[in-house]
Image (tube, rainbow, N blue to C red; front, side, top):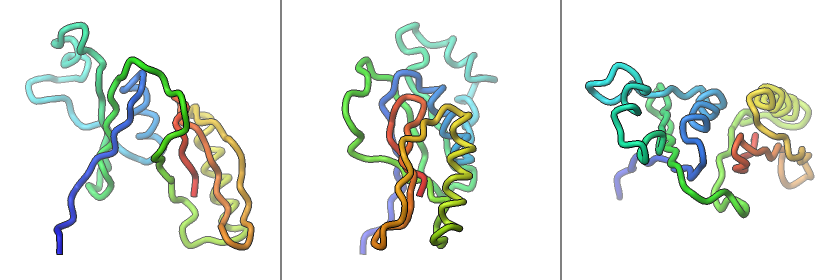
Length: 144
């Protein structure tokens, strides 16, 4: 049997730090301390050549259970639908009106952070309700 491997989820984006801080708010993640020898991230960024400044940022689960999220600046903008997306699991174990209420409450928390509510998909007898959304750079995710 193969050993379980740790992994990180990488986002291509325009503004790595801004997007990382958004996802910290969504998931309760934290920004790790700056690299050794630097008191702040601003100090670290200032030490880099101009073309490398603000080119990446990361955040992590403070419990160490969830994957690290890594955000890297790329020159091109988002053009098509994501092939992979995150599901923010706030309705696990809930059904019907109770589930929908939990999803809607999370949606209401995320919209002021800059998330966009795309639509609400109601339970249809096969699938439970979920709410597709967009993050601050237009990446799809679902409240599930």
